[in-house]
Length: 354
Image 1: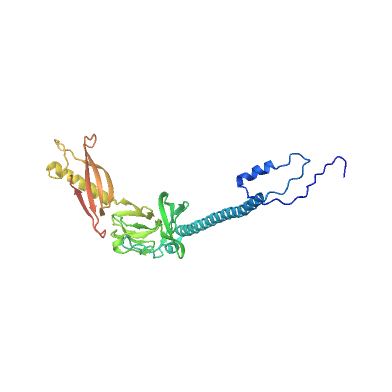
Image 2 (image 1 turned 90 degrees about the vertical axis):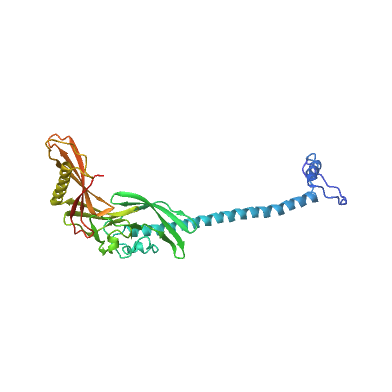
């Protein structure tokens, strides 16, 4: 034992009688009152039984609580992670289905790969004869789609379709079945072929039924440009560009130059009608100025057009004037040329003025 050190020795004594366990709020006060006053006093005794019991109780409560909290966090995180993985998988499956469908639409050759991915179409709306006839397409469309909007069993994809330099929006619908994600509504369009003084015999090498060729029944077709076989009246020199189908519909594009004999016949009919009206005005005649002596009219412009409600005919607007040198009177005369339903007729008649 070194000099200057102080040793405190606990006296021998009997354990005190047990005392009632203090309340939780009293434990801290008791600990403060019984703390040693100086360093020379005896070391602190073991905690009171009540204090030991409280610490043990806290450990028993805290450990399960922490474990429960950690378990909840892990479970929630696992659930979120599983949901994210599931959503990503669904997204990837939908995108894969759309990519496969668009690739089939844009591919050269026949449409079998694309039509095989869509359900049967309503024949009450349009005929499917061309769609399922392995019809070839001359110029496929270009299709660009946005991110899909995915629900429980349905997904919608907004797309833009480019055909012959024109871009139109459309929407593709997919549904989830036992076979995975499949196209429920694709890019098929009901097209009614109405070509005026032109009869389409075949599209993409596939012959047409008469009701389809005459526009009396629509047909389902995918977007793009199709080659067509057609015939026109002998009096027209026709150049056919093809059948162009977009998300909004389709039409046969063609140009024609009227034969010189047709122009001459149309001009002659218009001038004969004006001369007759000048000589003896009647119902359906335009208002003609009185002239003495009567000066002849001249036809100086002939413009033809086709009307959808008059499919087997062409209508010409003929501009006439007099006098020839310094005209002060202008008239517009309408002349109709009827080619007949089989394009084998050629009747020229003036449409009376209303």
